[in-house]
Amino acid sequence: MNITRRKLLKLSTIGVIAAGWPATLRANAKEAIAFSGPAFGSAWRLVIAGGTDGALAQSIIENIVSRIDFLMSPFRYDSELSRFNSLASAPALGGVELAKETVSVVRTALELSRHSDGAFDPTVAPMGRRFGFGVNNISPTRPAGHYGELRLSGNKLKTARPGLSLDLCAIAKGYALDAICKDLQGLDFLLELGGEIAARGRHPSGREWLMGIDNPQAGNIRRIIKWDGRALATSGNGAEGYNFAGYQYGHVINPKTATPVANNVVQVSVLAPNAMLADGLATAALVMGPDRATEMLKQFDASALFLVRDFDGATIHEVEVLNFSKGPGT
Image 1 (tube, rainbow, N blue to C red):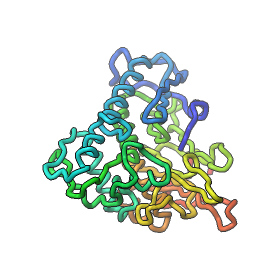
Image 2 (cartoon, helix red, strand yellow; image 1 turned 120 degrees about the horizontal axis):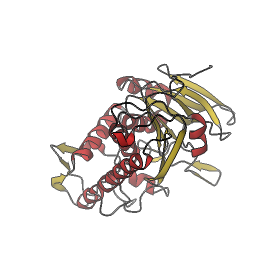
Image 3 (cartoon, rainbow, N blue to C red; image 1 turned 120 degrees about the vertical axis):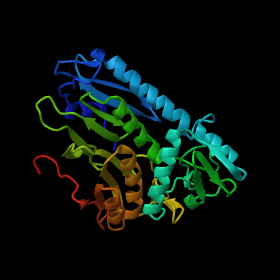
């Protein structure tokens, strides 16, 4: 989901700062202020209480974004992830040593791959490159769709398949959001990072935070839901796709067909216990569709709202899976 700064401000005001914050971050003012900055080819946007030391909060966010980018960005030749991809051009029998954070993200990515029967696959990048999506650092001729041939042994990642590459873009952003929320613990805030949303605390009126889901047809807010302690992530094909010869090509790839997703799901929003899970589950659910995704979502205590295109091609209806919140006033 792409929430503009205007939308975020419209939906968000800040509650009272918790006492656990250091003195430089405490504030009693109730007006909301917003900060934003670049992150992972997109942006982060934070709303906090006026009077809070926003510069310190901004520094925390920027440091985490920079660290995760250095570890997990496939766009950087000097990242830890790119080092694995470079060494994996020949069988990396001894494995590539990874930082603890990268190991955690890879482990979750492989777990999601297994529970989604490969609908989520962190080795799928070369397939996307064949349709003009993804990272120039990863050649479209490399093998893809073989998540089962990645092995974690302690802090080492191994593969015996030459050329197998790893791309964590569909999950690392969510991990970064979780890391930021942990470091901002004690502050009331609403934070969006590249479309994923998390919150802490409460609105100054005492009510829950509200989060918006875009309407991909009209460009407005389709649904407003109450933050219930879970993170929200949305995946869709429209914003980054293109039309060629009358066919719409989206950037999300179905690993089973090695082609862009071609079902009738326009967009799916997932609520999950943390942003990393929500991020990865949204991608997998878009590939699978509501019926096939239900059991997977249940395994991770998640729920989803699918926007599905009817047979006429113009009408979109909603499909809720596992009691996705309808939000206030509905």
